Image (cartoon, rainbow, N blue to C red; front, side):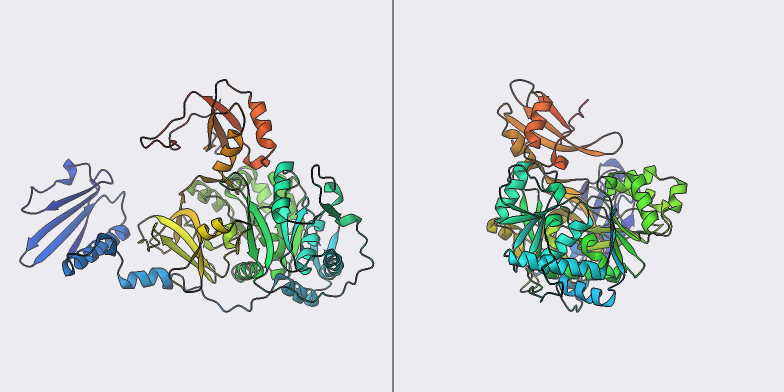
Length: 605
């Protein structure tokens, strides 16, 4: 029999054990312990009383802890020769609950390609406004006609199923039309930022093995790029039929490849399929309906996969997409005006930008946000401080949505309310499975931190031209035959309401303004500078609670930061460039001889 005794006097997180008649009874106030197991023997029974620090440990955790302790005892009593690695913490019932009840997400979906759905919506809403930018408005029918013509032109250039077609555009209606045309032709778009350094753009184009790219007149001259540029606004499409094309794709064909930071020093392309996008956006439409009078704001950089919810999400309902002008995504006042002027109902924010947004808006500005129904927050950790700040936004649903590029945008969701004190990443979306696993892929109990693995219909195909990395990150699902799971690298645990709590990373990946950054990629580029002997990069936070990257380097002489910045910007995009370069005399190491990244390095002046 177990007794749970709350005891507020315990000091720390250490565990102490007292066994009656073997040693003197331990008084918890006399020891620096947070949990005390008191065992006693009475006849043929062993009793255990647990005392614990209630300010540190919850009743939920201790009850789980005691149940699993009993489970261990039962197994060892039944078989005292049982190997340690065969002892299970969880009961069969608990394992079933975690694996299957919490992942009871299977929904029957008539999987289609994104093109099929767009045709259906066009036939139903042909004359309704679909796309708005600062130049003009387009109806569903007009977009369909233009994209049919351009898709046929692309097919004449050789685009077919799974052909990768890079695109270089500023945010615009042209960008949306080009993307829809590529997927209508059967291809998959590869978004490249116009501000990328030449070396990075060249690497992506070579890795895609593409014959041409699609761009606009503003971006037609790309230094160092020798492949053909198809300039959308300079192509005569009058000779091409505008009737609907035959559907050439299947749900498991590629729809896009997004390049993310790579730990080897070069970016890696994640290949995502139609069925993943269809599953994610269908689920979002069910949870957060976008109706006839609703509007999505395109404010996310299209090289960041959250943009996919904006690029296609508007016609999974029957609304419209409003394109925010380039640069306005950094200006809260411009965002507010766009929300007000276009009656925006659905909008995405990364937590850092939402924090700035909430600090800037006045009570008068709040009146301009009345059209908003949903704010989706993703890309970074949702802090308790931000949880308190969003409570200003009365009448707007705040959704903390978690995902990764490899799991097709989003995998879990959590709805905040006025009583929320924190923001877990929540529960899985439809047809998505989430697992908290240890290094050997066994199930972690609710109070144990482990790595998050994601399975189900939305998992990406893998990495372009990197079979070894694909094999390392995309594993066979040990619990469901024929399924695969993605190894996220995120540290998580289940909370007492069966939500997933995000705890951080188990590697050196960080997020800046929602962009995923492998610090090793920056370190490799900086380490190639002839004056740098060794270096490391750390994410830090300034006095305004803004994240930035700081590079620390070892060299014989202190190098001009301008020189190091020039070296970095020749190969890395702006969001990956350190804000400061700090010269150091030695590299701090741990006792095991590894770089001590957890040391409290000083902030630059």
